[in-house]
Image (tube, rainbow, N blue to C red):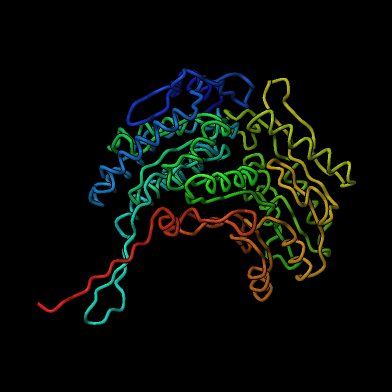
Length: 498
């Protein structure tokens, strides 16, 4: 993909998936219902997608349960399951340009990010868990001579995965790949804003040799398909990434149904803290800008609060504004674009309401704040920075999930810690300092599941991902994610004399 015209031509020729995948079959909703899949690039209708309801979810769950019960997947030798998952990764690699186009069209993200970041990470996740699945061991207890005890990991059964629209395939494979690796069956409900890559990858899974019924995809809305999945009595677990409001409803649904397990990766209000002795102010300024404006700010770990030590506040903020001002909002299909469209009209309106709230509360708007490219019909908002927030400001406390940065000032490490932790969230945090003692003190004191020192978003698939407090619980990525899709069973043999 070398030019906008070439990408547009490929997009025009792209055949989009139009069916769910249930029990190895490409199907529509039982009642024939569909919904319009709108691209945020220009507000046009990309395709019409099955709008599944309770009957469709029940069919998918029944297929997943049958596949689990007859052991067509979990009883395969680890080498065979590994071959299938690695085969899926290879097919995703083969079709990476089509998958990237679907992501850019569905979400408004720059095609360069979809092609060079999102899809490779989804492929890497699939491959990583394929390689890991035959390296999970049980343990033998410290037995006396008359006993033999050991613990083994047993797959849970049917896993329902409900995934977000900001990184559709990447986040889906964070859940699907380890769940399949542990021998479970999966029913995936992708976000209604971005269903395409989930539908296509379920087709690829069949091509890779994953048996019918093991990996099913149903599309639709949260209040219909998502609700039915979360309350289904034959689903053993819900793995979710999304908003705190939906996470709470999933907890209630679990309690009111079969007490299914729930793993939640929710929102954040992540602080990036820059001390006066920062070893590289240029790198920190780049991290401050792209920590919030990457993916149009639609990132759960977005560094939406910038905390700067008083001595360098004015000069550092000038660097940040200079970098951000140079960002051009562009067509997601243009390979030169680094900042595209917001995912939907609703998300654009949410962000603009927060901007209005910041102005009403007296925060100083120092950059942006306006909708742009409206003539395209798409949903574009320019990078926006507010200065002089207080810890009580709405923009310092609530998640915008858009390209809006709030700047606060602190005197010393203790004040930085207090401000950073003064939030109901606890997903990610970062700090920049040349002082190892400060780095150790602050990194341990921050209430966040991910902490980065002198870098932002610096870890990878080998490290667990998840939050503290109202950012949820349960971990994606790393070997830890495998264990949440399994029960730990203890077995004891009593050994008798022959």
